[in-house]
Structure formats: structure tokens, C-alpha cells
Image (cartoon, rainbow, N blue to C red; front, side, top):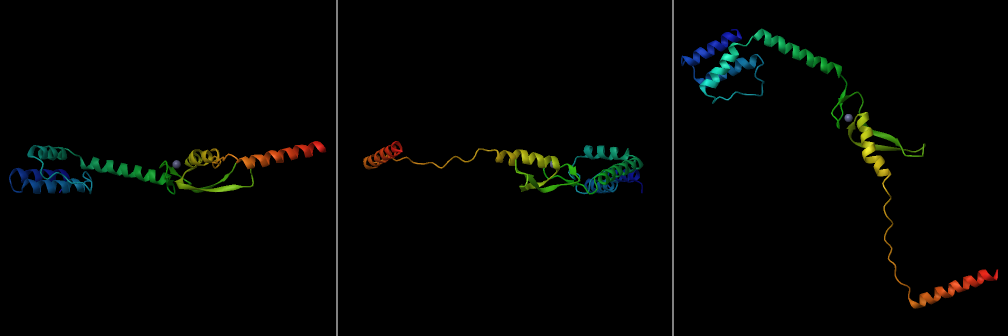
Length: 180
Ligand SMILES: [Zn+2]
């Protein structure tokens, strides 16, 4: 049975009480699914009211299955073309763009020293531009960050005997230099 005839038959069977509305909706859903108008993982509301169901039936009766199939074929072709264009490409885990090459690490030359290269592991596989972004954001910035401040030293005032000793020591040194 052709799609439009099938829809008309469902409507007739329902309106003449040969089948329940629920059965009619399930049959309708099945016919729509076969034509690809309802995805496999979606279901109709089996509790919809009469008017709502009648609207759907009428819309479905007006559908041209040949046109629908042509349209679906066109979409499939476009999908295939897109997939072919990006065959072998991978999606960058950072920007999600398809890229021919992804990097999991890079060897970076640290400023000044041409013989030393540092191997930097990336957070996720990244494309070229995203590697650069990562280096700019995390690595180079970290390298140029000021060094940790010196550990705190606690100054303890010298005891009088220490002061005396150092004064004596300084005096000795002065005299020694003057004697030269
Ligand atoms: Zn990227």
C-alpha cells in the first residue's frame, strides 16, 4: 500500500471505530517512521486529542512520498560529501574543528638556548592554532612569571657581647688595612 493510501486507511478505520485511536496513532507512527518522517528514537504522544491527530493525518495525506525520498537522498549525499571531505581528519579536542594533524605534545625551544628543547605535554590533543594558544596561555606565561620570592629571614638583634665582638673585629680590620 502506498503511503498516502495507508494514511487514509488508518483515518477511515479510526473514524468508523474499526480500530481504537491508540491503535490508529501507533499505525500512523509506523507509516511515518517507514518514510523517515519520525526518527527511530522518537514517539508520538499516544494521548493526543482527536483534533490534534486529525491535523497530523491530514498533513501526512498531503505529503508527497516521492519528493520526501528525493529530499532524503539529497541530504544523505551532502552528508557523504562532508564526510569524504574530512576523511582522515580528526576533531581538535579543544576547538572541535576537523584538522589533518593533532598534537599531543610539542617540543618548545626555551628562550635563548637553541640547544635545549622542552617537551611539553598538552592537556588534550590539539590542532596547531590551539597548541599555540595553549603555549601562549600556560607555558610562556608561566616561564616569564616572576620567580618565587626569597624565603623569609628573621632578623634577631645582636646581643651586647656580639656587638662588642663585631666592633672589635671591624676595628682590627680597619687598622690592618691602614697598616698596609
Ligand atoms: Zn583546535
